Length: 620
Image (tube, rainbow, N blue to C red; front, side):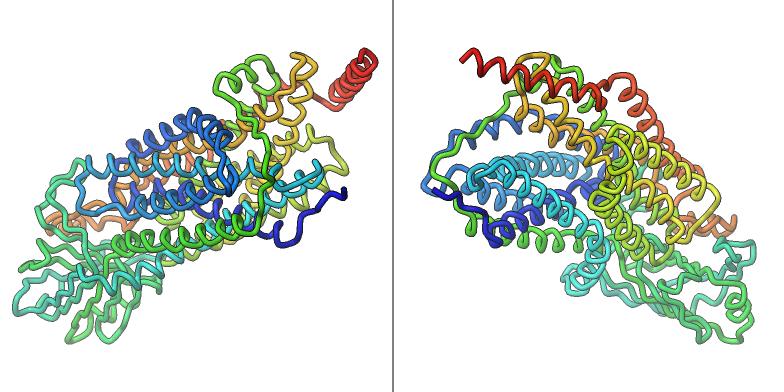
């Protein structure tokens, strides 16, 4: 009987499922820390601990789910029912996770984040295990299975890249639209008849910093319109005591425009700034400070009749609503894509599924020193990359800053994601023609280290042009992309080594650990990133609340207009560059000391396995 080969529709159906599930995974992996810490105000260290615990929990959850799937028998097969159940429940948890109630107190938000994120991980495993395990249920040959797995991995990379590229801009666009429609909005106009304004114009230098030149103008000529739900503070933020009910608006948390002396300034212009502090949303007092370049400063302060009109809207609310509805859109696409997979692919009636218990996974590592070496190397290499990726959004938002930080962040991620995919598809085959996989490993790790050194040098020297950051981005992301391929090859090599050493092939057990160790690396990196955010007060400094006296004091001292203070800037740069470099150096030294499977050793192992097989057949 002729074996049936996969149709184009079946390949497409399986690949589109990978796109959907990795869109969901990347959204959670890349933005859950930012969402809860920066937007919802959850303690960074609490989030780091939650993310790490969830990843450790996966060590127990993954094999348990594998056993449950293996024992499932339905008329729809054993894989597809769990694939649909996991997808639907995971989508519900995803939307819940990015729709945290803003009315919860800090402890309530920590509990909410912990429950939704851990349950999200459980339901993702519920879908992920059957997705990868179902390949033997509708393929025939080993070569066909390898090709389909490679296709799915590539499609998963596409799904991850889509989220990396579109999330920030999509969240801003969707959030702006939804905030405008929200029934919770404050829409308040202020004028001289009911509000006492203190109004300052402050000159900015060529670098955008506040100077000592400032002028107080007539507060009776100020008109302010605020739209969008504002974060009204309850009297305590971090270690700072603030007036209860204070509303504080600045460049970091507000979209704004203002018109002064006939000149209109928009946030997108990037050559001005604004700070507003009022005692409540129904305030009778308000302090306003506008920061403008020297030429505009002179024009405003010398005008005979200077009036000020301001329109401001909270971007904290924009981002909160943006993530809520963006996650809903991604979840719906996820369900559609997996439904296509389940409808277009038919399982064979009987297929065995091998599952690895925790004990088997532990035993395979302990008894196979080379597998242990590669697993630890994978954790270290991925931890280095994830530390940077977790902090990258803070670097663009608070360090490089600027009104177009979302656009620059998206542009950089587009380049970085593209380089990672191209490196796997094009650079690796080219390098393989000239070097062994072992040498390619060393080249890629060194390339990443070079990239981080260049990135640190650029960050410390004040480079702000996003295109300049493509240079270190090329070295880091190209190296990371190729390493994904190389370490998978090394992991396969350890299977043959284990068979020689232990007279047992632990192929399924060893490869089942690959997903877990990548998750573990993401958990460790999230904890490191959260410690960085906590130590250097990235959240507190970026959301510092100034009451009217505090803002007046800042104006009096001509405080530098910065998203975060200088010590926080230096700390952020150090952790996201020196931290990964140290981890990569450790990985390089550990790998060099422990890994022995060079080409000569692999050839020796291959010959030994052939001899054993021949001897076994003769004995039969």
